[in-house]
Amino acid sequence: MLYLGDGADPRTLARVQAAAFAIEQALGDELVDIVPSYASVLVLYDPLRSERRDIARRVRSAAESPGAITAAGGKHVVLPVYYATETGADLAPLAARAGLTTTQVIDLHSAVEYRVYAIGFAPGFAYLGEVDIRIAAPRLSTPRARVPHGSVGIADRQTAVYPSESPGGWNLVGRCPVPMFSPDTEPRMPVAVGDTVRFEPIDRARYLALGGELP
Image (cartoon, rainbow, N blue to C red; front, side, top):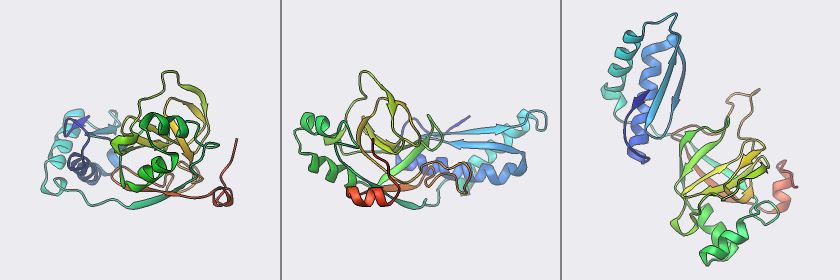
């Protein structure tokens, strides 16, 4: 595990992105997998094939190389979202707590260009930041046993799309019809760490036309 900072910020994430790329180039087919996150890079290798000290030396050298100081920009992804009380059970309560209308919550949530800081919890679950402070909301005190796939949630100043049905405690404000993880396609996910994401409000008819499901 390589640590490149103490918290989540665009500059640290840029270093993480670039270091991950440099490590991939340095290790080649000796690399089993690599997992970049907020301020760290997890390097997975086969200990029966490669020697730990050699891997550590090469990882350190790659991460400190000039090419790993600045990352290339990721791609920009637009994800459609049907914001409504029938798809976002917490949309109205969140608006009431914030002293806003549901329309204002939607406008604030969809106005931000979010950065993908990490992918975890479940395949395709991308942690995006940061939401406008006016609609930041703590996780639910009691998580739901079932959150439908595609649900868009807010937890503190992070937002995310649930890639599959699962338990969850984020505040739900809508649903996205775009699959966030498809194991049989390439790429398997529409976003990667370092990408930017913007949410585009769509109406009910458009959501259904794009394959979205309703309860």
